[in-house]
Length: 321
Image (cartoon, rainbow, N blue to C red):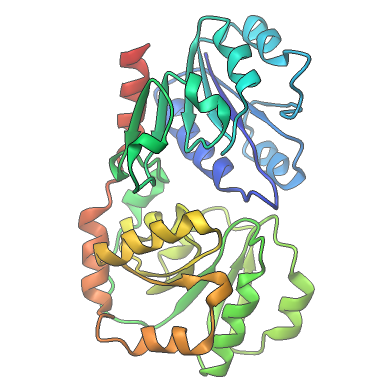
């Protein structure tokens, strides 16, 4: 039995949940039993309910009751996966004392040191900063949306643009981007996530050149209609590039800066800036740059971003276990 423990919120974003959903698609495909544990975040809970995912709401801040051991024994858990950004040492102790495999993703917390396997595919600095018995880095371990294979397409020009800045867009970067696009006379489709909290400001800002979309059944399917995306620096631009959709990447958080720079150097996207530095001149300079060759960027994304990372992650987990 796999347990996947996820933290999702407006402050931390919903990327952990979306990676969990990608992993679950693979586990269901190979008939591997699972259980999702998640904090009480209404938009995330609604998504799991709509998708008929088996889950339990837990208080992941509780370090006293040892709720982990109770669930491990009740559900006969063999493998525990954390996707929470920062797990604490007491949580890791509670899991490991049950003699099961502890796996973590992109973990900066004190509990990462007790993990058996630590997957950090978007960590582009020295691996000594990462803790865990075995650490795996590099984009070969990206867990991407399995639908990408069905929607791969080479772009040759920019006929339409989509703006999609995450499930929560914590800092309201969507508003800044829309304002800039308005000023340069460029319309776009604006996709807002389930935890977006800037709806009223957005409605006042948009005009007839913008369309707002939310609650889409498949973001990858939506992306397939567009030639350029403006995204954050999480997993979204990697999925977009893998499908042939180039991106202008704006880092919503400091740790996303290295992701944007990686994709820029890769030639499949252009890194704009950290969101606090965003202004019209930076944006227009990139649009006018000779580096912007949509067909070349699209082709590079299609050939350089692997889509079978979930299989590699699963094999490492099962091999180690």
